[in-house]
Amino acid sequence: MPYASNQELPAAVREHLPRHAQDIFREAFNSAFDEYADRGEQRETLAFRVAWAAVKRSYRKHGDDWHAKH
Image (tube, rainbow, N blue to C red; front, side, top):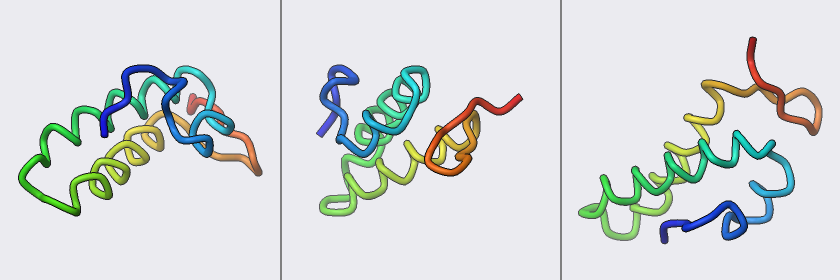
């Protein structure tokens, strides 16, 4: 289901991503969730994949921390 705010994101996202990366994740997830409305049970899985891919375009994980790419 779409997320209205970053506080609604799963703990794994909220607790590990910087705020800006959370914004990217939420916006990409919500957009993909709408885009894949016809995919039934796969809808949420696809939206998560799209959201993580969007985050990884701008952020890189170093150990347990995520940092903006330069």
